[in-house]
Amino acid sequence: MSKLAASDKFVDLSDYGRPLAILFANQLKNTRVTPIHVTFLFGISGLIALYCILQNHYFSAGFFIILKSIIDGADGELARVKNTPSYTGRYLDSIFDIILNFLFLMAICYVSKTSFYITLFAFFCIQLQGTLYNYYYVILRNKSVGGDSTSKIFEYKSPKALPGESQKSVDFLFKIYTIVYGGFDKIIHTLDNDAYKVKTFPNWFMTLLSMYGLGFQLLIIAVMLPMNWIEYIIPFFIGYSVLIFVLIAIRKTVIKA
Image (cartoon, rainbow, N blue to C red):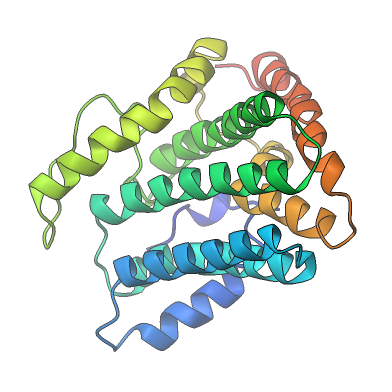
């Protein structure tokens, strides 16, 4: 099952690792490896990248950050090829992402001259950027004929567990998810509360928006690290947030509900 109908597919700048993720998932299709196993694997890759940053091995850190992004896409692909979608995997994936994002920035703060509070603000900015991308993308996925609707536009209550997963696990992970993401979701919903009324988003808009996708954000970090631009990473992502208001303005004026 594809995330989107063919007519809604767009060039996703943050999804550059998808071909390798599909290849990896297909290799695991007939094995006992589950999507959850793959989720833990991308977490391990992220922790290795974190260690490399702390040891000033920036080229290696960039490699493992990109590897993390590729594996990050493979868990969902494996769930699709095995036809085993789960809310457990969906929430666990997102929780791992936000934890690793925070740790990456804290590691960059530690090895650079950036202040702790400025780094916290950059983390807030990065998460808000990613939330905008996810907000519009999930709207598109839910309205796309035959698309993936595991992710919901509004996460108000814990969903009913799908076959093969525990309701207790879903409820527990949902609570954690709402704690770490709920505030960012509310901010974006407040900034553009009519977006869900839009019938669809043009492909060009989604491609532009994908600059805020997690994969593209991590690619920027992975490129800046070996170029020894570590002092500029935190300020860059703060300034990068200006596009949030530009993209919302485009949505409201060009792509009207």
